[in-house]
Image 1 (cartoon, rainbow, N blue to C red):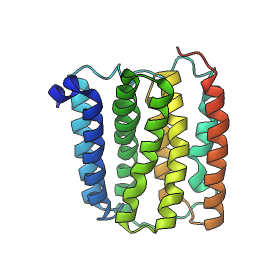
Image 2: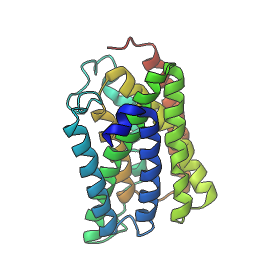
Image 3: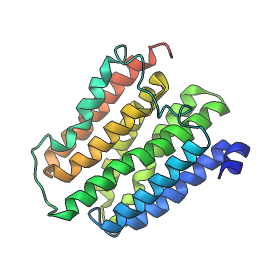
Image 4: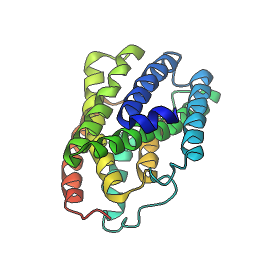
Length: 232
């Protein structure tokens, strides 16, 4: 893995994402509350963590410190607001027993894995290739398009498109927060919150639409604000 990483960081990032999307898509076919999905994501997370730790990459991707400029970034309040959207229409527990635990474990780990892959590996590799704006746009759009795998897990085409639009919006927020703050920790927490709250939230089509539209509006405003901050 490290040989490819050193030789071509961008290719390494792309291949890592492709492998993850295929593996995660297969795991999600077993159900989000499946112990096999939880076990699979635990193994993926361990492999990823050991790779980062062994090769002294924790600091490069901001996994060992909190952003020093959190105050200037409004303490990430707009991002936290978006993170709670899945419970705006109330709380409802559909899964029972151990299924809840497996789902929560899986979604927390998805937050870690996807942020390392999309915001860490891919975004950092793109930054080395040239334009910052190009790196931000590609990272956010790729993250959104990556959710097309949901079609393979039983979601409708329209539902998947809505999820992709939301993912693109949140992808821009996460990329800007990471770029301006230099730490993946806040975006990992936010990503995990969104996914975990989806386990406990009610499923209201109207609220879902409001959530997506609000996320896009917040993303535009917050990203514009962050774009004006000087990079630490």
